[in-house]
Image 1 (cartoon, rainbow, N blue to C red):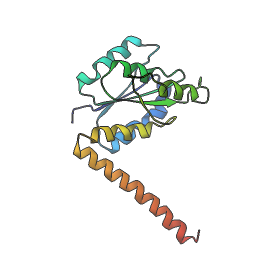
Image 2: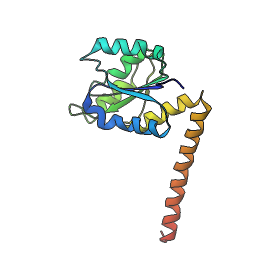
Image 3: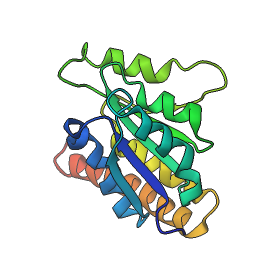
Length: 166
């Protein structure tokens, strides 16, 4: 693995409470990442530079979270050869998050952005691990273990309900 495999970017530090879930799940999978602020509207030059150079730094996937107009994931995807996972964020200026969801989801042909649920940064991290795991067996094994743990947790709850006669 390179020193950093995933870039986690967000438009504002107000997005951090949501986006830290991506970092936490990447920590679980032991996938190195960087986490930073890249605003499509307030620092467009930084966004262009980040998107155009991420692959040259060894990154394999970019997770981009944005609220409101949510241009960051799509603009980064238009400039980078890397897969971009968009995380729509329900922000203070949001219309119940729908503006963010639709801004990220409705990309034009030729500029794909994988889009997770509103505030779904954890799933973005899991998807990034699956993408990396498709080429790195050690990461794929961790993803398989994680999925097995999810299954085990459900059966534990089933057994708990049975033991209570429910």
